[in-house]
Image (cartoon, rainbow, N blue to C red; front, side, top):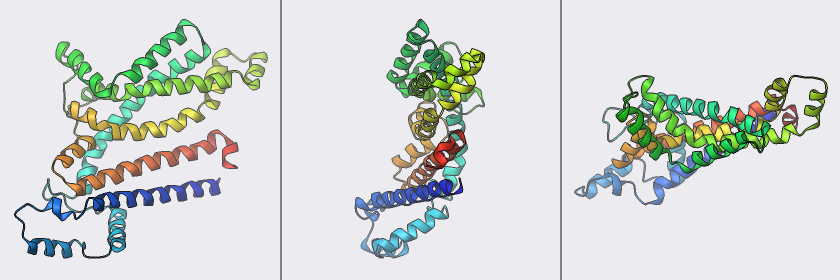
Length: 306
């Protein structure tokens, strides 16, 4: 078990290093950053002075190691759009709101997809299965931002049940949470259905039924646990997609999260903040996959020895 976890941690660190190289390269591939950051009326003396101050006169490998050291310590520099605040400070201020929104969306996705996926597998080729397929079709066909606008029109404007935008407590989370979580319902539901179909035809399930184990226990305890490997893999992808995909939803609902911060920083060409957002989102994505890999070993002992 320890060897398995150590290998996964090492692979995650390698992934983070690769991401840092990509982020650093993207910041340099367009040319001298000063050409974008300095105003048109800047003089050559301004270029020379900032080139030395920011270390742009050093070789690229030295600039990269400086960037890597600063990134490891969370130092991405000061924001240009929001004076007096560092890039990481801005990201950490907004991150809880995005995490809450992603958590609600994940709960919505799981609460809808899990029972429908299981019932579709158990009631294969019945009307229950057909309804599940229709729900999956709508889940993949409706863009999140469009669904968000429709939800605002119905539940906020027409029926005045939830607020239209902003963060006014739990009521403000419901609509954006449903809008961003609905898209994941289809893929998660079909994955659960497929995994359950494979398990339901296995020999140990037939043996459990022959022994007289109650059907609900066979389905929801024995089958679901063994069918959870594939959906668990997708959970890590869902978490990353919900965090990154929150950009459009946070803009539609004016939700004060990291996604909206990214849009505002991009409009202002605040590269310090954008780099911090990319690194933090990638770190969350890698950490989620690492946790899923570790959970594999507990769900299926065969994996830890592979």
